[in-house]
Length: 488
Image (cartoon, rainbow, N blue to C red; front, side, top):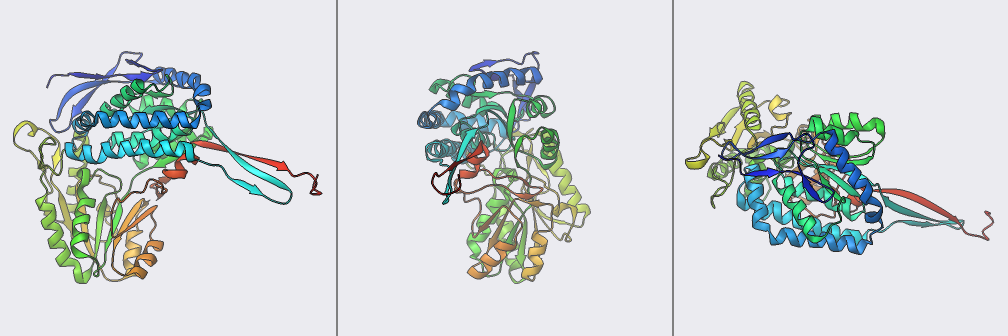
């Protein structure tokens, strides 16, 4: 395939190549071939972006909240006007079905911008009044913040971080994954078109070891919001911690899905299939460990297996495609290796377990069949390590205490789902699960006002709603004495 596109940095309101001229290849996962190049940034490019952000910050932070909100709404309008273009670019970059990119990624990105446009004008501070004094809290933007986003939901997570950072009055240097740079470039085009001032948003492409490391170490970057793998998050924290930078880390997950015998069976099966395989299983919220109460186990297993086998794997452009390609060749090999490990641990592969080569243009793409495995022992490696692909394990359980212990028995704690008609059980089990979010009789039902994030190795901090606005601001308490109280 001919290289037809080039993605450059966006610095100080202009698209510019890497200072050193270096580029990286960008692959189309469904084809397994290069279709574009992206600037390979380094410390020089990061320095230019931070300098532009520092220069823009005084005016942007003084911009009335109403104007920041207007610009965020205008950006949302710009994405909506080019929704098909954004969806096509996201699908081509990630390998996901184009319909999914349109209905989930693009739609949610528009919602992110609109939500935080509202937050810009509704965000309020606290006041505490006593007999002696009035205390009130000012919340000021940090200055320059870094937003580092992954390859699985490039536009959705980019807007999830950039929108609140801008709403709060910060200037941003963003680093998308070098694997999926297309929609960040389109987003920058929209920002320029609606009149976002130069330097308020800057985008530096490149590898984590060069551009990413330079960004987190830059002394003028005061806060870092990162979504990605746990190992990378640990490295980031070790690098940024000594400089006392503010961190929000949304990391990996190995999420349990608890199915009790009294569940709404059809809904539970259908939603569990969606939770396992949406976006090829490349969502940190996917329910990859499914535990079923023993009296329901065989019935659930058979129905779940039938649902998984109905999923169509193939060309992301085809209307009937449910699962597209994995985002990189290396990741496909990692997923296939994890399936091989499950087999060595005694797991029985009930369906899938292999690479898929669709007919036609996608024959060399990076596709893996939906894979369902049973028969693994508690504590096995397959149930402990994040696979981040279309792979799910099934296991029966007998008691509530047993399944809570097994659900909590990993180093992760991002989300969990449980399915039951027993309201008391729902509340009781939800309180015992070590997870930042617990969904009861649903999955990935998101209210943007709620705190989002995980516990243990799944991250530090929370995003969403007031949590995001608080993260992107620094509180200052002001205490004013009330004269005549005898405390002068």
